[in-house]
Length: 135
Image 1 (cartoon, one colour):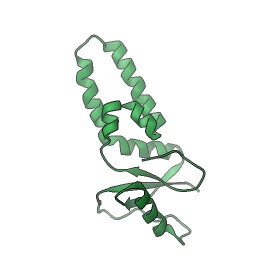
Image 2 (spheres, rainbow, N blue to C red):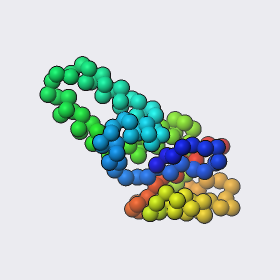
Image 3 (cartoon, helix red, strand yellow):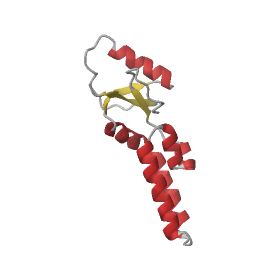
Image 4 (cartoon, rainbow, N blue to C red):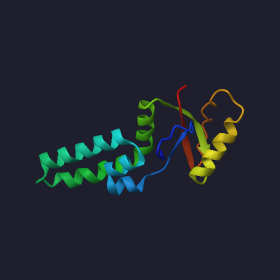
């Protein structure tokens, strides 16, 4: 999950999981997680849709599937936003929590001058995708 960005050079880890907070809070949860562009777009689309079709039964019928899709694909949307901000994918890291995954990433990159290649095709669980600044 992208946390508050500092100028410390550490990678941003995006946890690859279904986001329950996004299912219940929608775009606000994405903006809270640091994905301002995606959260703002979804929130504005929700407001416009509600304003245009507010009295029809179709609005609640469309909002739940839209939030479910947003919650299911929010890691990919957060990765897209990080790419827009100048980050690039630096590999897959396995860990039970954020701190362990970051430690494993830093152990893997210690002594290397370039970022490691993206991991092989096996997808471990739980895992996070690391994004580092282009440089």
